[in-house]
Image (cartoon, rainbow over all chains, first blue to last red):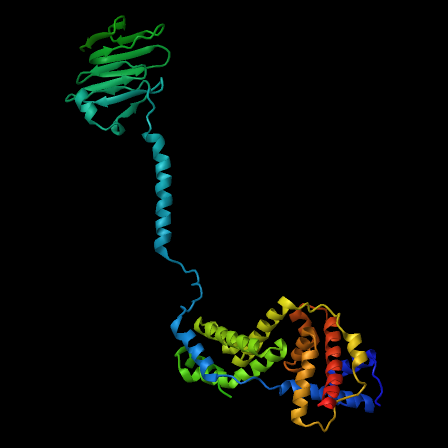
Length: 220
Length: 187
């Protein structure tokens, strides 16, 4: 009868064998090591079941041929491309330009009290002219209508002044509505605003507007 | 030994001989490992085929790099992982509970199998002894003895503590040793 090997001994033998030791310290350990070696050999030579090589190879070949899978390429590294960059810059500039331009194009209606809209030509011509081309007249600025055209002034209070050719005038809308006519003639459609008279100042004297439409002429 | 790079190139050209060559060269070892791990020959063949097809998919996708290892290395690792995935679904590797005490009492006290046992008797006894191991013991024993993996590597693969692997290993050896001696005596 061989001696019984305890769990503790078996664990020690197993650990020593796992660490690469193949020579037992005594007959018992040598015999156990021999058994371990037989187990190891048995595992390495364990008979695998017969395999149908041809069938498996055929299955692999089918998988390779019948279900082609596109080769996944690596994601292309980022490279500098001037065209998209130029497009982005252009888009940014366009947006920036529009942002800057909108306040210039936008003409509030009615216009602020201290601004005067100035257009040239007849009423028909005025209508034909895009509003974007009309421009504001600075308060108090001298206006000289050329000899070959007339001008229409629309004041912020709703009054309209038709200027004959070669008329020279300026308009001040601060406080009183004062039109300073140096030369030429005007036809004024004055808007009625209580407590805010319209005064036409000429080299010969001032005229206070009472009615709604009147004509005034200065001939120097 | 066939060159892995050459085999891969031939696979890409869909040369039928390359697939046959791979099967002839590596299938036996892979199948042996699968049989030992799973204890089921039919299931082992399923895993072998799955591992082979994984190789094909990798080669097709251009992801198989021979510089990172041989075809055999890939097949052994892939099949081992497939086997362990299957085992983990039905076995708790952490469990050390088993009929160990009972088995110990029933076993003979024979120290080791008869050295003079002939190959046929040994093979039969070995097969029977192997079926007596728990799945965890079998896995640890195969991974350590057949694949040469260290106890810490096995522990990492199976998600176990090294002590647990050590216990599985020595119990597997003890059980195999005693069962081999017993079954050899009965045959």
